[in-house]
Every structure is written in C-alpha cells, then in structure tokens.
Length: 98
Image (cartoon, rainbow, N blue to C red; front, top):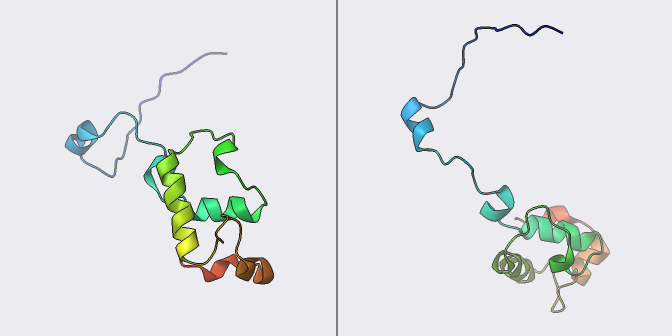
C-alpha cells in the first residue's frame, strides 16, 4: 500500500490567537457540568450507591453530593436518597426542570 501526501485546507471557528490560548486538554464534561440529570437516571435504573459505580472519569464527591441535594430539594429524591414516591408512582422524569 502506497501513501500519498495530500495538500488540504483547515477551517477553524476561532482565530489562531484563540487556538494558542486554549488548554491542550480540557476537563472531562463530567467535571464541568451538573450531575443532577445523570444521578436521577442512575437512581431510576435502581442503582443506589453512585460512589461505587465504575466511572470512566470519576466525579468528585462534592459534585455527587450537590446533585443529590438538588434532586432532594426538587422532590425527586426522598430522605434516603432513593427515588421519591412521586416519581416511582408516575415514573415521569420529564417533569423535573434540571
């Protein structure tokens, strides 16, 4: 198999200065976003202990606690961090504004 060199053009959505200012590696999305939606989906699947999951990039414990607290305040989780009876009865997760 022969390799050929091809000339091509590159189109970027940012300037060269912006490109140079970017970090070489960004934080994984799981470290940058709220885990409330992920937590709710995991709880809906019946998994109770999020810390024991085999995460590809494990979130920090503070993010997990904040997600559980948010879901509790919204009424999605009960005092034992399980799905609230409201969600178990309706099984309508789309009602929550996450």
